[in-house]
Figure 1 (cartoon, rainbow, N blue to C red):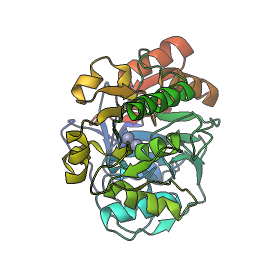
Figure 2: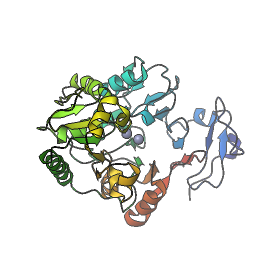
Figure 3: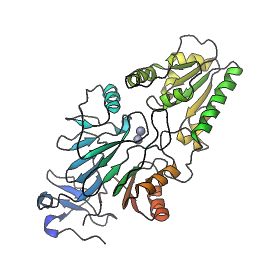
Length: 368
Ligand SMILES: [Zn+2]
Ligand SMILES: [Zn+2]
């Protein structure tokens, strides 16, 4: 068992108390007591090498200094790390600079209407997370290396060879598809079925409308469908033009006003209300959704589409387990989706200490 903290540096407090200016809420790994540094003395007493990981304004890592991974708001006195430009990872306000890739800076800046100050940090190594263009994992250096994955994908994509594991003491890993039922077929197979489906539709003189998220998934679909007569809705065309600045090209044109010969149209699901897309739907277009959730039998009905293809920008269960095994950490924290299930399987199948990060349940990683 880990040694308890020296008592004079802590006060035992109620979980409802918020973090104080110089202090911090912490609980041991299994969360039996919640502790608070009210003075910050502990860090001044030469304990700055200690490592703490907890949920508070994104995922916070204290490792000699304060890091916030995908913070909700950028904190001026901390190192703010933004993994990628999906809305659930982009801060609502930017104070000072953020550590992110140039693509993330450009896309997030465009989406939030902010001019981002993109910086680098000597203590943080940026690695490809393979999720969407520009997505980054962060390896925080210190006495104990922490690898924060953000959203992760280890499969080859048009923009990435997939995330590659690196050795770390502590792994903070996403667990969106962290259940053993979420194992995706090989990408090549899924892409072939999607192309066959569009060809069959065209043979019947029908349009194909594919619903895919504006940033990341839409471009993946466009890359997979190259060679078809490809069209995309305005938000996707705008996103493509940002990515074109970084060397990607997608060959999709804006949706024509009037449907002509069979076309393949890529649209976000909100695009089904786009007046132009509506004309294609009214002309009997077949519809598809593209998502890892397509593995669930009910997805097609929930998404109100004719068919669904399990093409994901996240790692599946087997890939999350294999990635964890290759990182070889001493301790793992999971977040998003099936976090508890993945933590349990990492403990039971890989024999590595693991738990799910929980709001208001702060975690101390190998404190003593
Ligand atoms: Zn994402
Ligand atoms: Zn996410």
